[in-house]
Amino acid sequence: MSDDAFAPLLIYGIVRADAFAPNDVSDLGPGVGGRSLSIVKRSGLAAIVSSLAEDDSRPPAPIDPETAEALAHRSVVEAAFERATIIPVRFGTTLEGDAALNQHLQSAAARYRDTLKKLDGRAEIGIRLALREDEPTATAPRDTAYRTDRPGTAYLLAQQQQQNQRRRRAVRTYRRALSDRCDRTVTTSRPAGSDSVSMAFLVPRSSMDRFREAAARVRAPEVQSIDVVGPWAPYSFV
Image 1: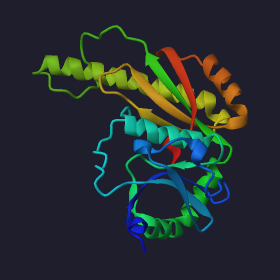
Image 2: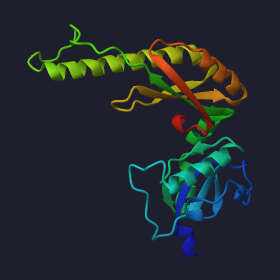
Image 3: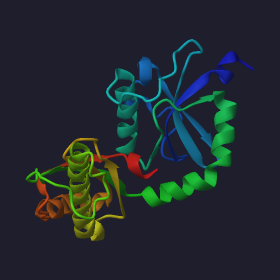
Image 4: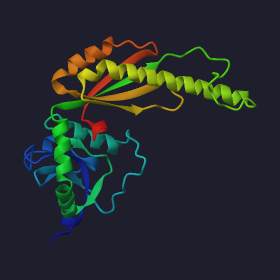
């Protein structure tokens, strides 16, 4: 058996075995580091992979999503998503050769098939909410159990509490308003110290335009503006 059979593989995504022919991934673009892509099939599933030489450095954790390597990985996933239902795999996920990958596909086959079924005909659409700035409150609310011998700390914590409450109200408003136009929704980001929040929605591809129109009609007093982005492969739902 050649040494290539044990060469580490970088995983991009999982699709059904009939989604791509063995040599039908060249139009997905080059993989990370310009490496060629290939397909490994097992148990009715297929993994899109590229080789990873033994001396290649593994991506550090946490991974910066804006590095050239991470962007190349995402580009492959998005190209595959345009052609098939895909389970995106987090950048930096590797397995030691074809045998290890075959074993993984076999052991996780039932879970992957169930996930692919749930993702069929769906895409991820993101919404970023920019929140309005409230007028500062001079004192902490009465129900805030902060030490009164540290008024500065109490003030800052009270402002943080109010900001968190505004975020929760805004998220609740958008979830309720758009629940009948998506399958699932998750809050993906609450940047510390930022008046913003990001959400992801799993939306049928056939109704993405209607979803965007519905999102534009939602009104929440806490929200100053919204940014609707996507569609993407469903990263937030796997």
